Image 1 (cartoon, helix red, strand yellow):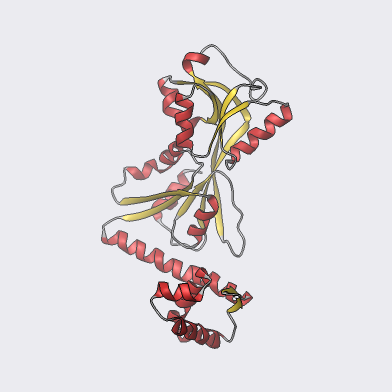
Image 2: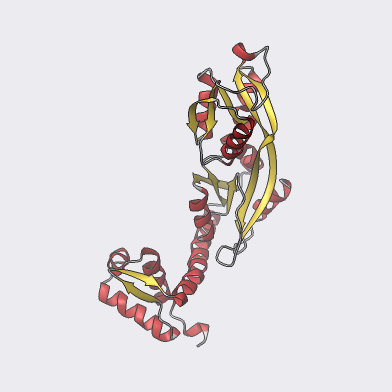
Length: 294
């Protein structure tokens, strides 16, 4: 069988059924009948000489061959979506860069990272946040160009990813300047029974902090656990509690003297990564941005 004999219309239908996992719902989405959709899937299986689905109750499960075909479909149709996005950007006289960032990442860090693009009149930015897993899935489906994260990811045959280390920063203990202007605390030794606001359990930094406190037999009084760094910044500014966070989150408050660094630990660091997929159209502006971060 040659590639010109492959029916990409049937392959597209397979892709939608495989992703939905249900023939009836896929037929509704594709505005066709269930019997017509089933017939076209069978034609594809006959052409490939491989079964792609097995039925498990009311759902369709992929065979081993079906899983392999789906992986290729994600690239084929994902690249098609990427191509349309690129063409749309060109028709508007712009180049669109689609950036995803994990919800626990500082918005100030993101802005600092993309700042070179903000002055580029030929670039339009699409920014979204979410969980690392969801963003990586969208990256692999070519719906994003790059993902910013504060933890590394691994690459394998099913997930051809490139994880580029961008840098690290120390984590600080900050508090209201009016209260803490004359005091310095050791982290974590002096935090026992003190009121703290912390990144939430999903944040990579939180696991480091909890391990330090456990090793030092320190039990701070946790008043807030916050995944969103923008909200943690507001709590640090307005609550009166001490807050453990990356300084970039509260860079403006530190500069203006509203908050003060009360303590710091070199054992607590946040690491930053840019994740891309190896199967992608290379964008010159993105490549320059990645290179300048090294």
